[in-house]
Length: 303
Image: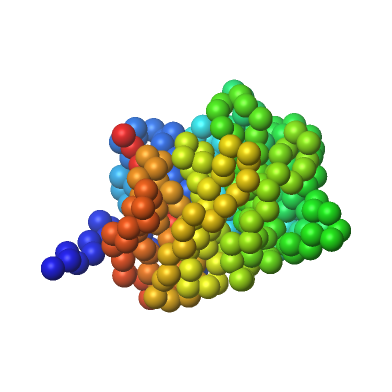
């Protein structure tokens, strides 16, 4: 008989609204307790202390508009947040401060999350939705210099980018971008030339989320359908469908591959988190605690 799914270790309450995004980082003062960042539909960012299981700081910089992406940068004292007010904010949290020190206006009204990639010490690339509906813009941080604008050919018509993933085969090598689009396709972009290397029709509906394992050169994507799609990248940089996994209920809001590349989690519209083995996509558990859509999932993994 299968074991029942585990209960939550603890439940964090007090956001006052639906949680749209989560991000762990281990740069806090307590090495054994990571910091958890959450962004909510009421425009607030909560900085959670997982030792006390309480909120350390509440950040309000998006005018009450939903915050749907947060990520730590420059260690424990800086973070980036993206909201539906079309702003990406850089926060200074050092010495008790909670101020926005810089921002970028996205000129895009969608809900495509940014993607961040560290390319050198003190330097990052940030992919974000561009001015035109089908564009992706890549900036260098902290200078905010434009690296490239990725725009499909006029006859391609993939629609809006829905999700983004910057990656590179090795640290210091040429970076790439994987983007999921409104027409259900995933596109691999070469940032150095701003060209499409491969395009794969993965879903019948818009790609809501994707993640990529650069070690195994395979990724996973979900949509509003009841199908999870695993795809791979061959040596000629062609994307190919490797496997599809039928789900009981439709709607995948988020997917996340654990840092050790052994476990995959999905966040579902059916209120459930599903856990799979990443190697063969073997279903391992269904976490059934929430009573509404699970919008996001994130791993805190330490070796």
